[in-house]
Amino acid sequence: MSEQKAQQDLQLILDDIHRELAPRFGEGKVADYIPQLARVNPRHFGMAIVTTDGELHRVGDAEVPFSIQSVSKVFTLTLALGKHGENIWHRVGREPSGSAFNSIVQLEHEGGKPRNPFINAGAITISDLILAGHTPKELIGEIVRFVRYLADDETIVIDHEVARSETATGFRNLALANFMRSFGRLDHPAEHVLGVYFHHCALAMTCSQLAKAGLFLAAGGSNPLTGHSVVSRQRARRINALMLTSGHYDGSGDFAYRVGLPAKSGVGGGIMAIAPGKASIAVWSPGLNENGNSLLGSLALEMLAARTGWSVF
Ligand code: DON
Image 1 (cartoon, rainbow, N blue to C red):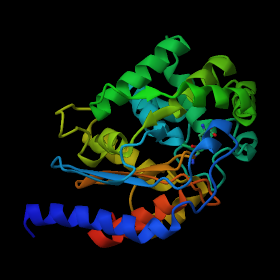
Image 2 (cartoon, rainbow, N blue to C red; image 1 turned 90 degrees about the horizontal axis):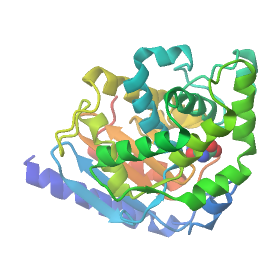
Image 3 (cartoon, rainbow, N blue to C red; image 1 turned 45 degrees about the vertical axis):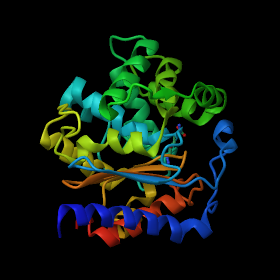
């Protein structure tokens, strides 16, 4: 197939997915444990694909910013690996948890060491790790600059209303952080670590920005649009492996079975998915399934993978 034909096909595939899912817009349950997220219109649906040869395809609300929440954990993990290398694995595991994203149950039996960097306890540990030598404010600034660099977009900002809303109500995360501190597993006060964590979760991005930010993972560690080298090829492969095994929490097996792509979800309804060697994809639909992952977003990616043959399997 010619390159031009393949590109036309990709836009047609996106248009078809949008049209076929339109009757279902609004399905699923919008996260309401963070009050500011409950205010989002559940009928939004956007999708963007950036291919490794630089083509951008969009459909629906692909230019509307949303709260990326746990998708940001991929970016803080990447920063932590850059700062501390493989030493991070002394502090956090790399096995699927089989439990909810905010579960506390395994921590007690496992000495306060979270199963992986994507469950809340694991991402809080990653925030603690990268806080070394910084104030929370400096580190939040560094995370924003890093995400802007990845997406090559200086307009990306944190939604401070969302950060405030979660700071006021994030009692379970406070419990997780204090519980880990009781095992001697946090180096900084829980309030400082959560300040960082809540702010990176509150990054607001569009599907286009998010797809661009993930492109380095689809292209062996470098962003082909900017020429920026972000991580080594081996590290990109390993981050993708973690996204495949743990990116959807206790729904990771089902997502791998249905979609077959490394991906990370967030309770804002966003999912960033990677088709290695081919493209980075972002989808947003705020209604969630029972695992806290976007219901229609997962379905859209299942349709995309089936129609492009992009499954890694
Ligand atoms: O800590 C929380 O609960 C949120 N800031 C992030 C959780 C999240 O996005 C889970 N993903 N589906």
